[in-house]
Length: 322
Image (tube, rainbow, N blue to C red; front, side):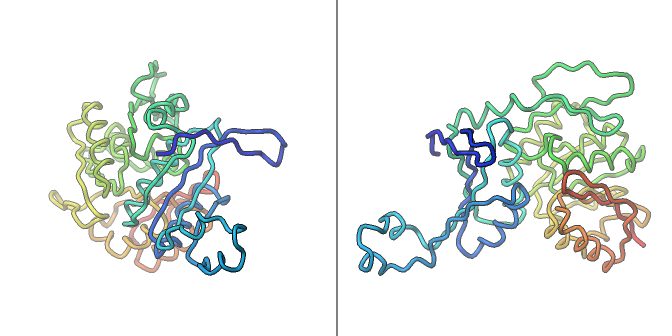
């Protein structure tokens, strides 16, 4: 991992501001999918694709052509976003790790301007207790917090997984969970990340919560958080979307999928067999521009939209079988 510091000029204000460059490199064939994922973090992307560089340029232009460009690997491409120093890059990195895993991309994540120790620890300064909705308070495991009357405190250590509660997509689902979690219900969380949604559902009264993620790191982190929460009715296992999901005990009253639009669309034809006829599916991770596509897919496969929430360009949906 690169350890040099990077200073970039902020053109709007003319001052010098420090940024962290988050760069992801994939095989060239996966570039378009990577751009779609990275654009969910920022529309200001830097794309490094040398596949069209003419190797004869050196003959024509001599030393004017950087040798690094001519010798660059044309089988891969990189996409970067730049995170300002006053915002945690950890959520972005964890988000990318989860989405890259769900899409089965062969992505390598690199932080330019951050050494490995900082990557593992310094982001914690941005993670503070956060109240979401009416009752849920997400609190870092290392922070002290005295809950007010009626508050449910969920203590989390996100490690390298996605789901601290600070991201809009997670907040949207937690708000919906407060409304649709019924006492004694069976809950399924697809793409669990840190396990935060399954833990929240259990604290809100769900009797059984089963969480799954394709990323073994996320599964490990979620299991640690579940263990620390003391909840015996929450489990986490590895699964590629619904492929390894257990139906032991029957269908689910409540399903959460905080993923991305394309993955939600991919799983929609199969998710009905896991959801009770009167159950509710909560879907998030949907950028506003793709919300209509996801809604159309749900309606095409026999679902109806009962609620749509938005937060800073992201959408969360509650859907039921027609």
